[in-house]
Image 1 (cartoon, rainbow, N blue to C red):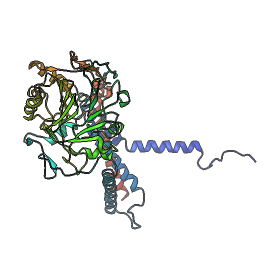
Image 2 (image 1 turned 180 degrees about the horizontal axis):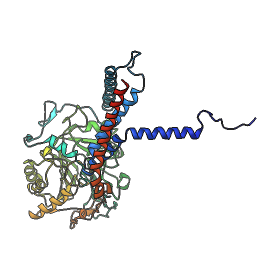
Image 3 (image 1 turned 90 degrees about the vertical axis):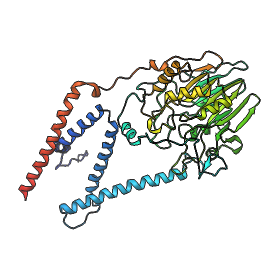
Image 4 (image 1 turned 180 degrees about the vertical axis):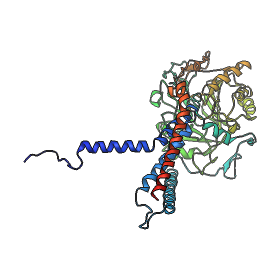
Length: 494
């Protein structure tokens, strides 16, 4: 008796494979119009910089495919003969079922995140503060939303733009500590609003943000730009003091805070509750209201000053914590850190009260007409420097995330040019570059040396562009012809 692999005499393996290939070819032929139309449409949208629309189409296709797949099961089916009307009703039931499942998943996952995950931080509390009213903190100046265009801005975000983010790795400098003499201050900018300030006696950092994915608790947040030298806290010296401007995710990162658990923290009112939930002890955190001051040492004094912005890490805690800017009086020098802010007349008051400033780290990026009251445009940055009586400006809040519609390098370019026209010194170190406050500041236009990546030939090739529209029409013709043939066949069978 011969032992070997069993062969199905009715369907030999070769015949079965041929049968499967034939079925696949028939399926492709049957849906060739839809396939050609879909592929050419998505390529056209890609060439028109409408990748967001392509993403929506993919979601719709997956949803439609799920409905078709469920329609092959007995879900919502009955033993009664299915007519066209009953088939339509069943499809509607399947569609409603899928929508209900998706909506339930989103609601439950959001509730679990907000109530279980530590990312949103602590619960809101009430404050006896002149800046706290009706359960929320207030700005000194009321917002003027008359010219805002949220829907217009949202529409513009739907259009991709390669200029909003660098298409290649950003050149950066690996962090290297400078040996300091008494009275010297070194400054290192790590992109966005993270500033490391060092003296021989103290090391401080502002809005520390390290890691690859920390602008949003879920997967919706933008990823950081790729840096030539990614940074981590392990590369830095021991951080003595951490200063937080407000509790938005791109300024207050839970994982980074946990890594800094040996430091002391200085935060606006309400932010302390977040840190306590993340394991920082009560004695490590000091909360401040606007214009509250503290003498940390004889050589180091700080004050929280106003900013024009907002706060919140969840759906139910908008403006439940304060936002602000910081003044540092350190080693006979005065430094200003703006955090996030729109332009405000209060800059003049801050300048009169604490200026002149040896350097001002001013928010310069992620601006748009739709949120003009909470982020400064380049000309406002320069005016703020004038109001503050700052000897030099280092533009921050740029070169790390795509959060607005402007080209990624535009804030640096415009603040530099406008500052030059108004005799304002603008400091532009490379990301990771360390310099001394009492020495000439770096002012190289490093962003001009960033190479531009080569776009795909599918976007730039003229032959592809010429062929797409006719092929798209062919797909439409095939779809129409296929449906007409099916109608004719149905009429013949009847």
